[in-house]
Each structure stands twice: as C-alpha cells, then as structure tokens.
Length: 431
Length: 121
Image (tube, rainbow over all chains, first blue to last red; front, side):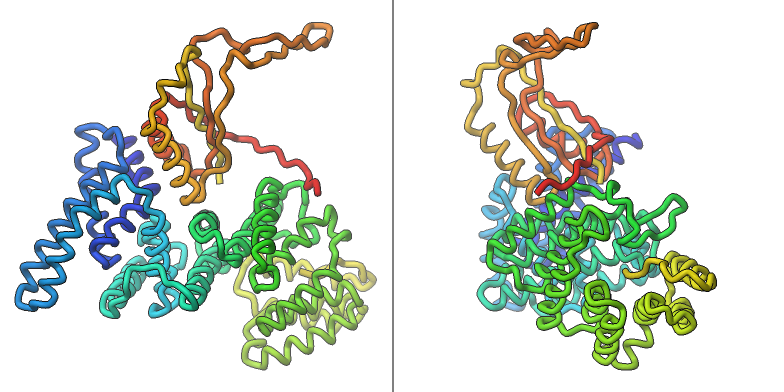
C-alpha cells in the first residue's frame, strides 16, 4: 500500500510539469491548471492502490486532468453567461478544447513547458514569487518543501504562491512564449530565477542541508531543460555551464567533520569530472553561439579556469583577472569587484590586491559594505600576506561579527587562531 | 544526484522487421522528453549479442577472447539508458515509460560508483 503511494508520488514528480503545462494551454491560467492537475493526482492516490497502477500512468493522469479541465470550462461558462463577450470567447475555447486536449495527450509538448516557465517567471511577479511558482510548477516540489528550503512557515509560502498565481490571473498574463526583444528580456528573468534557486542551494545561507542539495539539483535540471528547449540562446548554455562547474565541486566543499573547505584547499580528486566535462561542453556551446562575452559565460569561464588547474598553484589567475575586468564592465557590482581584487592579489601581489579591494569597497558604498563579511575577510587575508598581522586580526574579527553562517564563522575563527601564532606568515588565504 | 541504468532486454531471435513506426516514434518521443526533463545522461542500442566478444582470464593470467556472449541465454541486453534521478522510485517511474515505449522488459540498477578520471584536454 505504502509502496504504491511512493510510486504515485514519483510518477507525479516526473509528470506534473508536462501535465500542468498541457492543461494551461487550454485554461490559460496556470493556477487553475495546477489545481486541476493536482485533483487528478489526488484521484490517482485514491484509485491506484485499489485498482493497481495503470499501464501508462502519465497518460492516465493526463486524461483525468483533461476531464477536469472540460468540467471547469463548462462551469466557468455558466457562471459568466451574462458577460456575453466572455461567453463567446469561452464557446470558442470549448470548441478548441477537445482538439487541443486530445493532441496534448500524444504530442510532444515541450512548447507548453517553455510557456509555463516563461509565465511562472513573468517580470510582473516579485522575484520571490517567481522562485516559489517555478519550484512548485516546474520542480514538482510541495509547498512544505519550498517553505523548508526558504526557512519560512508553510502558511507564508502557501500565501506567496497563492498571491503569485492570483497576480498572473488578474494581470491577464498570456500563456505564451515571447518573441523578439521581449524574448531576450524574459529569458533573462527565467535565468535569474534558476540561478537564484541554484545559489540558495549552493551558497548555503540558510535552511536544511538536504533540502538545499535538492534545490541545486532542481536548478541544474531546469538548466538542462532550458538548454534543450532554447538551444539558440547562448546565455542558457552559459548558465548551465556555470552551475555544472560549481556543482562539480560539491563533494570537495566539506571536510571530514562537515567543515567548509575553500577552493584552494579542496581535494581536487573529489571533484566530479563527469560533471565538469558537461559544464565545459555547455560553455563551449555558449561561446560557439557567439555569447562568450556575456555575463553568465564570463562567470562560467572563470569557473572553468579554476577547474582546469590540477593544483591551486596552477590556477591561471592572469586570465581570471582579465575575465573579471570584462565582467565588471558589464555588471559593475561590488561582489564582482571584490572577487576581482582577490585575483589581482594572486597575480600582482597583496598590495595591488588591497588597492583593487579599496576600489571594490568604493563601488559598494558604506551601506552595502557594512552587511557583507567578505570585504573584511578578504582584506584580512591580504593584510596577513603583507605581514600586517594586527590589522589583519581586526579585519577577521570584523568579518566574524558580520557572518551569519556557522560554517563560515568556524573558518574565520580558525584563521584568527592561526594569526595568534606570531611568526606564521604563510597561512594560505584567498577565497 | 544518483545515476541509474535502465537496460532493456531483447530475445536473441528478435526480428527487427517487427519494429513498428509507432514504436520508433514512441522511443524518440521518450528520449526527447527525458532530455527536456534534463535527466538523460546516455542512451544507446546494442549490436546483437551474437556479435559480442567475451574475454576470460585463465589461471596463468592469459586472456582468452571468444566469439559470442558471456552467458548463454535466449535474451540479452538490447539497449540501455543512463539517467539521473532523485531515488530508485523516480528511476522506476521513468523506467515504466521506457518499457511502455520500447515494448521491452527492462531492468533498473543504481550506479553506485562513477569513476572520476582527470580532465584530459
């Protein structure tokens, strides 16, 4: 009995996106499409343990959702009969309905999935709403799971998802794939959402560990899906490359006690070389499409520089500085400038690194700098390399006071301990 | 994410002329769906088992190569797909679709070790 439930849940996980996408083609409202699909899933939970799992579970769910969609349209039609225009529209819709739904049963519906993605990531929604909807509709995650990943109560997340769906419905957002200039803008929005999901999983700012791993996996899956659905968009491949390359280091980022291990100290034999190869080929594809100078491609190229080095010492920091220079031109963000300062320090020495860091800090302004522990942390490293130990200590202490992440704090405290030993000038620094 | 092998089995006397257009288009559709879902790592069909070569190490370390499959059987692996899935349950859900599209019985096994060779340029 329990096994059947698990099977149904697994079927739902792999089928729900296409199901919702196909039904949304007819309802034109992704919130309604999700509810109707969910109803079909609940029916499966009731029937399959009794009657057995159907031969083609995906088709069964599609058929059940289709019946509900037809009912929904009929109901809607009766409710709005007074609004003639809408009624006519619905009549037309209903005519299309049978055909469209029949087709969606045996047709490859990648276009629908793409439309679903564009709609869930529509710029009319706040970014957090886009993220929640994407995970719900394209990731097949439950509201409880999404809430756990973002450390908010389930009720709050439920409201967030509800509001996002309502907003899409009220704003009359068409269920379609944009074209031309609009496509470029909308692809940006989709990629941003996917990358934020990935980073929430990867950067580990909050939430349960396994749930975070699930987020990174989900973002990767969405990235691969997009690369398949939008093969001409170079930044789609570039973002996928960036995520694959970063994720390939996952196993090496934790030491035996679960402590964080930074890039220069990682055991490179623990990197996932199959994943690295996938990342490299996605990056090549982005470059072949002529997008090598775009933001995600530059970031992926920087990651690739790290992955190509067999030891930390072999890292081509010179090339990394050049890539950061290019990236800084496109996106003059303090974080990019900060990372560039680390690279400059590696190529031209800690004094030059400090100069670059000052420039980064100026870019950030006081308010942003005050909230970001990496500034004092990097400054502490550079000062340490210059032998200015008491200043270094102050900076590391400041960084400790600013970080909210337990693992990072441990790392900084260790560094501080190293600094207590007066003649240790060789402690390796950097990100 | 864990990797799983889905291998489909074919009788050795399988007659390729029994492959229908519907079957081919179903298999293509599933491949496309797996790619769109971002879960397919590798897929391929195998030459008939009769064309296999088998290697056996003798007691003295010599390796003997013989024609034919390692095991005498009436059925052999005919095709395989390697996918990424969250767990066995999810891999099975995909395998169900594979069985439906290929009309072949299939076996699913978790791949617990993936070698990590260095990056060759």
